[in-house]
Image (cartoon, rainbow, N blue to C red; front, top):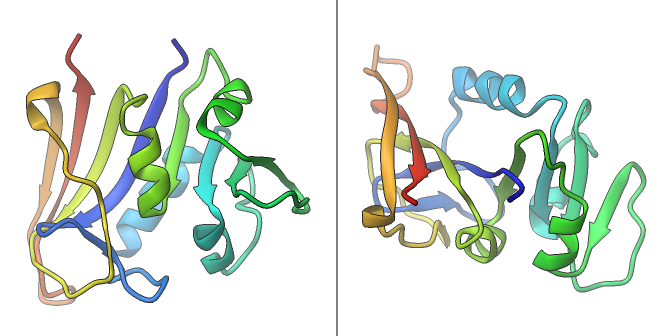
Length: 163
């Protein structure tokens, strides 16, 4: 089985975005995302790709999921989950980076979740799919408490799928 990891920052109400933008700015989380995904395959939907300030994300193999028959400079394009999985590495983690439809499509295939949980509810138009935590085991957790600059606490939590 190819290692498939979902990496996402979600609010406690499962919110992940609004109008194709992130709901918060956590510089440490962005640095963590980069350090974890660098050198790996990342998969995103077309809306996520279009929201990136720099395309493609440097130092990673970018796979963009779309129903369109297009070419994107510096990216691979996949039209289905199955097609994307054929492009995955067998010996390194393959990261699913969003958006909501892509997360939902890959959640049944994922064997690891790297969650940044923002301990606050946010108004949003995009949400992460409901996670059945009976299928997952928490293996690592790091909590960060607001020092006044963010307005909320957050946690990094790693889950692996129970076999």
